[in-house]
Structures are given as structure tokens and as C-alpha cells.
Image 1 (cartoon, rainbow over the protein chains, first blue to last red):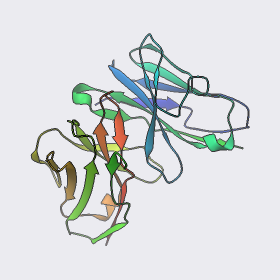
Image 2: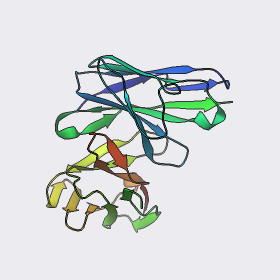
Image 3: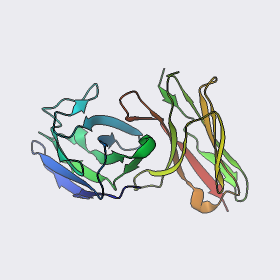
Image 4: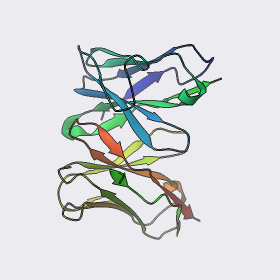
Amino acid sequence: SAVISQKPSRDICQRGTSLTIQCQVDSQVTMMFWYRQQPGQSLTLIATANQGSEATYESGFVIDKFPISRPNLTFSTLTVSNMSPEDSSIYLCSAGTVQETQYFGPGTRLLVL
Amino acid sequence: QKEVEQNSGPLSVPEGAIASLNCTYSDRVSQSFFWYRQYSGKSPELIMSIYSNGDKEDGRFTAQLNKASQYVSLLIRDSQPSDSATYLCAVLTGRRALTFGSGTRLQVQP
């Protein structure tokens, strides 16, 4: 299995600001993903973080709002831009290993005031 | 129609009983299926993966897959209060990401 860490673990931000979340995996992985889990809801995929190229976004998520970087096989960042209270959520990074098994980081709990 | 459907629960079972969690999916070409457990305030933790029709057992957990019926289930034998959590069914998409059901909340009564 892959061990995944995320920073920060939580943050409280003012509307209109941006926050960058970091995700670090302890081994090289093929696939990295970013999910959002809104209060009381299940997980929704934001995008696939592609190493060395632009991320692949799901319907309803755009690069200007959620820019993603993945400079190598073990690290990715997600930025939540121009935040509003509706962005308050848990943001989760996952890494895909053999047979497509995905492991999740501990999540970043974001509150936007 | 949602791509992955689960009863939200709560499903309440007495300690020592078998808990049965069910999931249906809409994409017939799906090949990989996963069960995650999520405790309140924590991230999802992988319990089981299953790729072939039939049963797959791991300790107290058994995953069952029926591709013809597009149905996946998770059985938890000898349920313990520590099994109380939300169980998420997930299906691998063509883009190798996961689509999750809404989750079933399980309560094991001591």
C-alpha cells in the first residue's frame, strides 16, 4: 500500500483568498487524484493529476478554480482559488497502485468564512 | 440514475450478527470494485477489492460480485461495535478514477 500525507490538515480561510494543498506519496505511483467530500456527502472526483501535463477535470470543475500540479510521480498540489463559503469541504488526495487500488491521504479540512 | 447506488441507512445490527451492505452500479463495462470504510472525521480506508464474479473473503469480511446483475455486496461477520462506520462502495471508471456511492452508515449495537 501507499502512505500518503497531506498539508495542511485543516485551515480556515477568508473568502476571495486561495489555498494550496500538498499531497506527498511515499513511493512512485502511476495515478494521483483529487476528490472533494462536502459535509455529509460522499466523495466526488475533482480531477486526475497527470505527471508532466495538465490535469484532467471532471464535469463541474475547472482549471481556473482548481489548478493542479504534478511535477513528479510522488507529489501533487491542488489550489482552491478565489474561495467562497461553498468551497468549505474536505479535500482528499489519492494514489493509484497495482490493480488500480487507491489509497487516500488523511484529507484537508477547509472552512471558508 | 446514479452511477453507484447504496442505501444510506443507518443499518443497525446487534453485536455478533452479520451485517450485509449492498451496492448496485450502472456501467456494465466496470471491472473493478472496492469497499472502503470511513469513520467520522477520517479519510476512507480500503477494506476489500473484487474483480471477478463470486465471493472473496478476508477475515471477517466477504465481498460478493455479480456482474450480470451489476451488484456488489459486503458481508461483515461477527460484527463489532468498532465496525460502526460509513461503508462506501466504489467502482473504477474508464479513466481509472473511482466513482463512489453515497455510503451506508452501519451501527453495531453492543
